[in-house]
Length: 552
Ligand SMILES: [Zn+2]
Image (cartoon, rainbow, N blue to C red; front, side):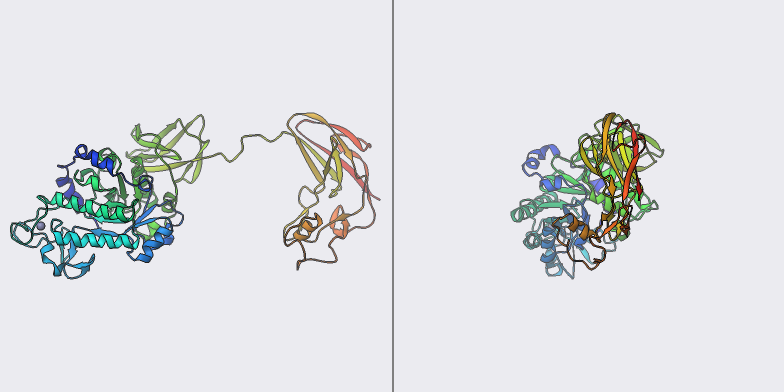
């Protein structure tokens, strides 16, 4: 499962010779990647606990356990699981992918001196007693293909095939150690991938062969037709450097231009090993990968996996790109159906002038965790040096329709609950408090409000010239019962106070029992002064009239 800078460098030197997209175009078109892979934006790397899938938009996870129970459970949870497999190397004296190399020494790659070829990771990763295998030998091929088939039977979505190196030459035939099936190691390896992919598709037509050469730009052209997705491993962040490595413009940007149509690339950034804040590396690597519409993972450092910014980036779905990658004043950016990504790869802070085709009035800045207003389809956003950002389109929360500005407030004094008026012949009643866990009188007690879109004169009539008592419920449930609402639970409750339910309370102070002394209407104050029960009032802006009562 490990992969290094060391192998990357070898590939850069060896691999550049053989990129033959044109010759392979026909085959590539005949076997497109599955749509779930084409639509993926992030994925889970090194996942052995399926609760990590929750809250993500992942469609697949790699480097998973290989038990049937796990592989099926992943499917049930809506993701395909891709266990680790290699056709490159094996342990000499351990069971590995269903075989022991010591029982089949003829499977070992033979070097120029006629000796067993140690794995390329013998020194760099101290992989002692691990040997390179010859993909050109019939027995070895049958063994690893049987292993792939077994994984598919258990429910895998395919395999994650590591170490897809343009294999070193094998001198096994020359030294009489084994027979080769193909003239070259490249042809042998390409055919082995073709066979593996055919097994995968026979068990899951939507399955996939994910491979890792670490450097998709230099993958031999012969390999692409048999691959659904390649990997850019140690993408910007690696576990053997404490800084962001490589040259952004050359190594990490524009790789999509060198990938055949219909193929995808998984970027694996080992975030958590540089001296930068984790959040900065997360957004920089994410935005860089997404510029190319590549799929991204932040690696498997526990503190990075659980970081809130990681979880946020795993959760979002930008959707299909709606533009190509653009560059303006050295800022790279790309629009998607649901958002925008941008990278400032320079060493200076720059202002990103975003404009045009923004469907919402806000964008959510996931780094700053704030909404940015979009005015006239434009926003100017400062991007710090060496930073990446992503914004999601954020629909406005307000309706855009203004509330009516002309407000009539009828206030009783003292405030009397459930007191009836007519406004333009329509019945209106004053507020009388409400129930939560206890009775709350509330700020609107004894008032009523009407709103109008245009200024006009309205007629108000007092319907209750005398208020003696107020029927008050004893609980939220009882309040429903008072309304004769047939709500479950609107019956007996333990909080019921038989001394209060349905009792007649003082309408000006409903926690007190009614005194028997009524409140009588004596006239209007406020915007209109009158002793008549019916008044006319011009409502332009906010207007308050006060119905005065006196207790006798
Ligand atoms: Zn060989």
